[in-house]
Structures are given as structure tokens and as C-alpha cells.
Length: 298
Image: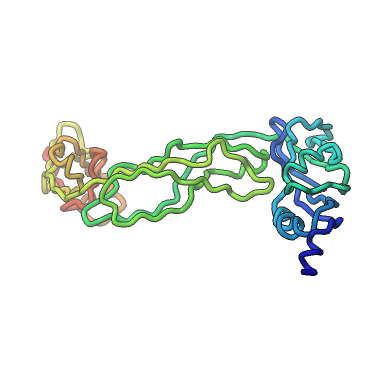
């Protein structure tokens, strides 16, 4: 009973709040806030203090700075805000029934620099594991593929890409579309993004192995009028191909060459072969044989 009676009395208490900017002047970034904490002396009933004001103290007080008048000094701009002229704004963020007696400091100072913007590529941070015989059909796509980043110029110059949140996908056997949050790199003052997420798109298909015989083209510096012949004349390419593209596979889509210049740097009389042209929808995983011999006929 004694405690309940005490809680109905009015008390003058001083509460400290962290100061945060709700908005900033156009094309400016906040780089310094010397008065980052203010002390407010309020009059409140004991019950209001313990039940609501203490929990409100854990939240920052937000001030609108977009109309702040700035004074330039070199590359920096300074501005100030009178807390005594923003009592209504502060009261709106405090529990009802609170009376403000005083605010310290009376003036809040803020330091700004010019804000720069730069378009930076988005890199998906994902780990992919596929079901048996399934694989990625095309490259990983993010939409948008870049984000407009605003902040200090020296910070923007160090950024090569912006990562998405890390995600792992297992047993993939079909396409996937999902929004991923962009990760702020954690500089101070923090940079700002034009968008806060990007859409990840994966195209997944069932794959199989296929073999195709392809003739070998010999690149040489033999005298004109000479003919040549490789042994063997054709190679077998083992490819990984999506089931839906299987009927598109054709030997004419491949170009395999052997260059005699390779013999100048090797004692081996066989020439390594190289696939210099292949359709984008396949992946060559094996060449048999991977070297050929050749004969020049004058």
C-alpha cells in the first residue's frame, strides 16, 4: 500500500535520450553529431515513470534536419537546432502525461559533408547444391544488377560490389526466384542504398551426358600446296547438356583445332587439341583423345 501511494505522487526526474536524425538536408551526409545525447528533466507520476518512461528511454529521439540552415567551412557544413523550440516534437515521442521542465543542451550541433552517389554492382552471396542430375542452366541473375549507393566519396571509391545476404539452397531440382536483402558494408557514416533488396533468379534443369564426333582442324605453317592428315581425324567430345536441349546437339556447332606451334616447346610429337567454339548450352567435360599426330603430304 505504501508503494502504491508513492507511485501516485509526482516526481521530477532527468532522463537521457540518444539523438537520431529522421531526415537530412538534400545531398548531405551526417558525419558528426557532437551532441548525440540529451538530458530531459520531466515531471511525471511515479507509476508513469516506472511503467512507461523507463522503456521509452531505450528508444532514440528523432529530429527532422532537412530544413536545417547550414554554414560551410571548407568541405564541411555545420548546422544547429534549438531543442527548446522542438518541445512539441519531443513530447510527441514521449508517453502521454509527461511534462518537460528542461532540456540540456539547449542547442544540438550537427556536421555534414556533401553526399556523392555511385552505381555499384550487386553480387549474390549464395551456396547452391543440386539434386542428382540437376544443375544450373544459365548464369545466376539478380534484378536489379546494380544499386545506387550514396555516401562519402572516399567510401564509395573503395566499394567494388554490394553483397546480398548469405543464403544456402540444397536439393535444387527446379528454378528459383527469391528476394534477398542487401548488406550494408558497415562504414561510418553508413552509406545509403536506392533499394534495400534484389531478386535472385535461378534456372535449373535436368542434365545428361552426350557424345559427339567432331573433325580436327590443323593449324600449321607448312609450305603452300601441301596437304595434311591428322591421326585420328575425328575426336569424341563428351558433353553435359540439358535434357531439353538434347536434340539441338550437332557436330557442326563445334570447332576443334590442333596447332603445330605447340611442338616447338615440347619433345612430344603429338599435338594437344583445343575446343575453340562450342554452343553455350553445353559444357565439354572430356576430349578423347586429347592429342593427335599429323602427317604432311607434299
